[in-house]
Image 1 (cartoon, rainbow, N blue to C red):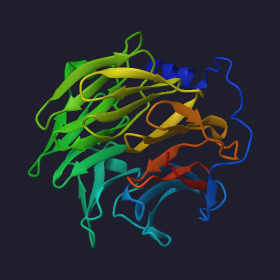
Image 2 (cartoon, one colour; image 1 turned 180 degrees about the vertical axis):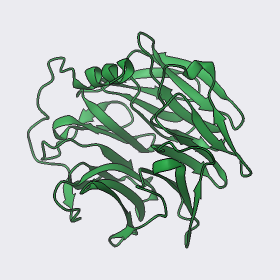
Image 3 (cartoon, rainbow, N blue to C red; image 1 turned 90 degrees about the vertical axis):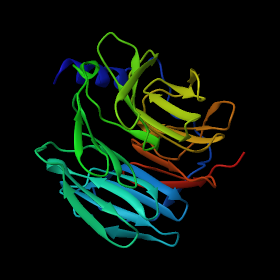
Image 4 (tube, rainbow, N blue to C red; image 1 turned 135 degrees about the vertical axis):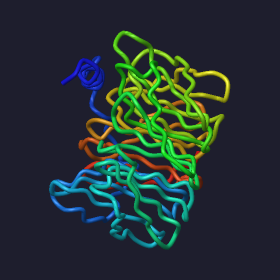
Length: 305
């Protein structure tokens, strides 16, 4: 294990006197999906409450499911071990997997591809039309401009590892950069190159948002919000958080260890009892407030304030 990975594990694992998630009536209900014993949902994305995608680890392999508003259905993107999906529209979905493989869904058909001379496993992707950015958990990202793939490996990424991506457009793709003894840095892909900005203390785990002026950065112990000009820390009542999602400026959720879920109502984060103690690792919030969170099972509720 390298020093950066050890730092991230230490930050996620530190307790800081945290209590168990609050008792009380659960605000979330179980979505009846049979993923099988030992399944772990580690990704949720979508474009609306009737277009939601799920990725999970099951029996040593990977599975993808799609919710069309009536039920969940197994989907088989033509990638090796689908690791992550990004849905920009119902007819614009990207998937990535092992050995540099990717695929695009146009609403009817999946078209497969592979990044030339990149045998690395891809762990995240953001795509809008034929413009794509992919990450491989290393000090580089890969960008496609509709014609060719380019490897972006500036010196600012040396010693870092890019795991997570989020974007509001093909010219505004963000990624958290963590280095030892340095504040969290956000790298932005502008469509041609990367720019860098410091955010605050901690380790950047995941990004979410609804547009260029409403972006969340999750750290295991806190969150930061970007309003289009400035990053501002927004403390959370629970530590050990792993995933965040936003559907509107007043509708967001973050989830983590021991069934913890916190929801943003436009002014503050507050606890939202889930009724479980399992580790929650994925979240999605649709623009209408329908929200899903997941770990070994999938849970659902409506966020309206």
